[in-house]
Amino acid sequence: MEINLISDTVTKPTPGMLDAMMSAKVGDDVFKNDPSVNALEDKVAKMFNKEAALFFPSGTMTNQTAIKLHTNPGDQLICDKYAHVYNYEGGGVSFNSGVSCKLVDGYRGMMTAEQVVSAINPPDFYHSPLTTLVCIENTANKGGGACWDFAQLKRIKSVCNEHNLGYHLDGARLWNALVAKNEEAANYGNLFDTISVCLSKGLGCPVGSVLVGNDADIQRAMRIRKVFGGGMRQAGFLAAAAIYALDHQVARLAEDHQRAKEIGAVLERLAYIKTVEPIETNIIIFELDENQMGAEEFLRRLKENQVEIIGMGQGKLRIVTHLDYTDQKHERFLTILNEL
Ligand SMILES: *Cc1c(COP(=O)(O)O)cnc(C)c1O
Image (cartoon, rainbow, N blue to C red; front, side, top):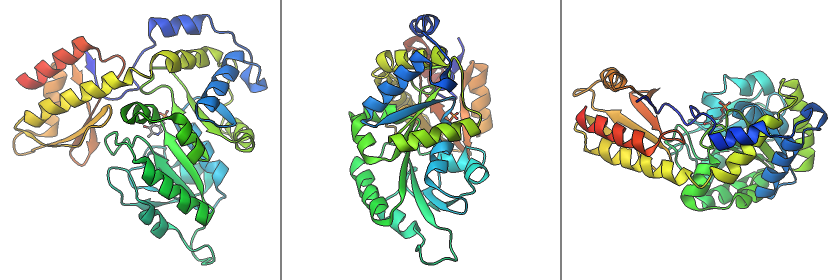
């Protein structure tokens, strides 16, 4: 039995999702004539209490579009040092928007309002880049799937209002946070100018991401998406998968969270594991005691048992639970860990 825990992106469409895709009504979405894409965009905009939404091929493209929307070349955005937009989007912030990142040394990928305030360059000090945007990530990927405290997000929003900064949420795994903390999508929509959400992570779609915002921003985002080469034609087949996932595969994220906690509990008991970071959602980040077992050795032994996980650098390893990680695989994996 192969057990792939490298990411929640490794899932394949379920039979129900494939049926929804096969029977999708489609058109040419570049002409806004794809009824399934239009339905998905309406649905997600409503969920977040936003005026409009736009379907994208990837989460990277939604984030990059949002950054382009809120900035001009030469500007600076503020984000945590762990941020996906800074670490894992190929330098797109500078390539696509000509923008630099002011990194905040937060806790598990999360900043405080005070840290954001100190990261803002005074606008009249023309020697420094102009600060125009704050990017938040929830859940924080490199932070081990950590969930933000909503009160802190509200405090940062006040800072953005006071300093006239855009407020973007990289919500690739926002669904996990909503389920784990029993929060409402609309509250996030009311707080942020733009939010990107992924459909191909925990929700199990093959492709897709959505950006929500006000009408004017989404209108401009359509042009930016075109420039980035992200205009798609009969994308309704993909949108139908997304609608199916939103209707059937959100609440079940709680199972991924439960299994992650159970894996964490087993890891905690293993003598050669030094630390396991707190587990709130579906991501487990842990570190080995290299004197007892090296990371390479650990990965090799797992591989011998047909289990794959990945390294995060600096001696940290990551496990991510997901839709295709069934109870049967879970039981098997726990046994393998206990016998390793
Ligand atoms: C996966 C991810 C993205 C988007 O990645 P794509 O692979 O381009 O869809 C953005 N932000 C975070 C936090 C992610 O984990």
